[in-house]
Every structure is written in structure tokens, then in C-alpha cells.
Image 1 (cartoon, one colour):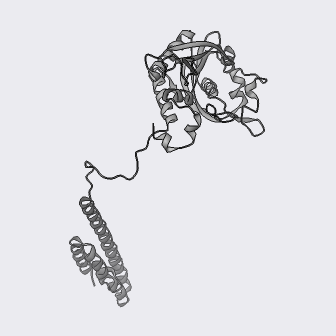
Image 2: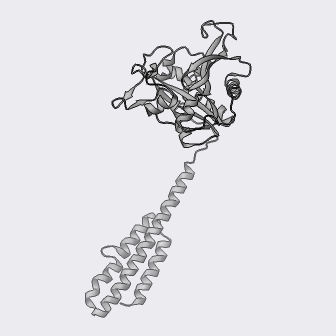
Length: 341
């Protein structure tokens, strides 16, 4: 046995592998590498050689086995890929033609869609979007927003407290403005959408879980005129350019002065109906100039900076826009209701 014989065996095997298919490739493997294969028999016969020849022939033969085995595996992989491509070509679907799809097309939940629509309007007005935690401390949810310890909103009947009253589920998205101001210096223009929680009984207009979008702008020389301009632009883009708007004086602990914003009923055009309770107007949000105490809580210079804030109830504006008379419909997951949007 010599080098030439084994080299010839490898050349012969390589040629056979090149022309093989998936069926014959296994026969080639048995022929050269099987129990009674050519190279296996050579290794079995090493006892007939001298120690020097054993080392030489054994090394060459083992290398030949590895080379042939590698060639076989590469060929098998190539053949399998070719078969798969051929199968895919035969079974290729024509996606340009109509075909049956067993599942109906999905859509966004109306609340998610409303948040996207509202956010889109404010992004076009130069606002960025931030997120805040749903579990807050009393500092963020109340104290930093100028809501004192004896304020009714801090009563456990209104708030879900956790861990021995150290933490709570946020009752509004207003704490988001504190988180933003702690991390960023003016100028600020941001909205904070999210889910909020109130410990109250459910009825047609109230639910323990709902959604708000908090808005905040802080900079030098911001006035109530800026607030009115931004909110008027938002309302006309969201409800339509012809809808009437009015600002009514109100009171919020974290803004001064404060205002409620009403829009003319889009169903009766201000004449009075069951949607607007015959008033011709529907309240959609609260707003005002950021209270100096709120600015001081985040170490802003209240003499240098001013700002405005607003809070939009997403369910409220969505109910008004689509004429929905019960907030609970949003949370029942009734497809008969959801498919309308």
C-alpha cells in the first residue's frame, strides 16, 4: 500500500461524488467509508505493516477518509438545496391573484387609534412624546403638582394605594411632566399619553381604568395666548375646522389661571341634544398656566420660565367624536362594537 494508491482512491471517490444524486451518494459513502469500505479495509490491514509504515499509511488514510466525508456532506447539502428550490418553484404562489385568507383583517382598538391621532396632531405642532410609570409615589402624583396632603384627591376612596400607601397607581398622567422637567431643562414641549386609575364605581361615563394625554410646554415668555393657540389648532385638526371652542375659568391645583375647554356639539351644531345634554357644548379637556410651585418643585426659576399644561381624557373625546354613550364599551372586548372602527 502506498501514497499513490490512496490518492487514486480519493480522486476516484471525488469524481463519483461530483456526479452523484441523493440516492447514490449514500452508496458512495458505504463503498469508501462503511464497515467494509475501501478505506476502512486499509486501516484494518495496518497490522501487516511495520511501525513506520503503519504511521505513514494510517495518517494518509485517515486524512483521505476526512476529505471524502467532507466532500460527501457538501454534495448532500448542495443536492438538498437544489431539491428545495425546485420544490418551491413548483409550489410557488401567485400573490397577485385573489386567494382565500381565513382570518379577517385586524384593526387598532378605538382608544389606541385616538391616542395615535391625537399624538400625530401634537407632533405636527412640535411636541415630542414621553412615557411615565403607572406606579407612582405621592411626591410625583400629588406633592410636586402642588396638591396638598388634605386635598380630596388624596383620599383612598379616589386612589389605589400600594404597599402601605408608599406607592399608588397614578390617578392622572400629570406626574409625567414632573419626570420630564427633572431630566430636561427648558425649552420643553411634550405630551405624555398613558393609562390611569381611579378608585370609583363604573357607570356609563366613569371607569376605574382609562387613558389621558398630558401636555406641557415650558420656556421663557410663554403666555395663555400660546396655550389657546395650540389647543385651538389641535381641536380644529381633530374635530374639524368649523367646530366652535370656548374656554371657561376653572380651578386645578397645578395650574393658575386654569380653564376648562368646551367644543360645540358636533351632532346638533350647538342647538342642544342628548349628547351635549341640551347645552350645545361638550367639555373635552382642562388646562392652564403651570403653577409657580410646580416649577419650583423641579428647581426651575419661576421668575424666568413660564409654561402651560393640559390634560385630555382620551375616552371622553373618542366618545364625543363617535357618538358613543357608554365608556364601558371600550373595555368589554365585544367585537360587534370594535368592528365599527
